[in-house]
Length: 171
Image (cartoon, rainbow, N blue to C red; front, side):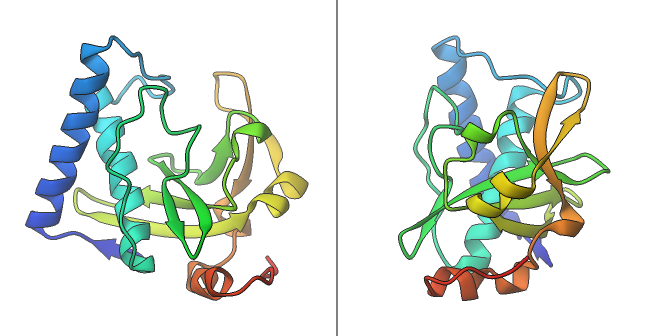
């Protein structure tokens, strides 16, 4: 599923990304850099694009708060009391990954990828329990990570069914 943004939405996302970037610069907070080809601002913008795309699908709002410790300690979105982490990738081999299993702190995670300057692909989602049971190790050149390829995630079309019930949806 592709989510597209109009000029107004992009302007808002750029302003929020800029705010996050400036606050962290002032406090001398360093990003955990895994992609040296992106600036800190670009990393914030791409992450926000993913979060906003999922929020549009779920008809909920993004969290505009700024956390100096990054977003691995909080959920990006909440819907029906279920916490959601959104991971956005630019990699060709689309893998939902965490630096360690303990950093999956939400009820579910969604993988998104950047298609263009205004388009985000919603790749799929997985519950924490399924991730912990099925994740494999990957090494992208910066040490071991735990991940699941996009093709093994639940279809994004089923996410609202899961969020609206208490039942698990099979992968």
